[in-house]
Image 1 (cartoon, one colour):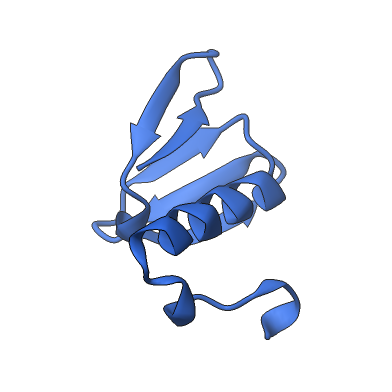
Image 2: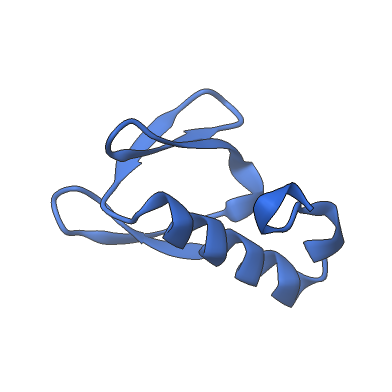
Length: 70
């Protein structure tokens, strides 16, 4: 789970394994596997770092691309 903040300021936890796509359009939009979209206050890079940190802690970091596409 990663801790994010909704536009109204409320914090919530999201299962990072359910994330399909993250975009900055200009707000950060997270699309889940089921198609649901969530708009958050967090910046795109912050969400990226939170996801990678969480995946590293649960041992699936090797399946995630590093910054710069490597």
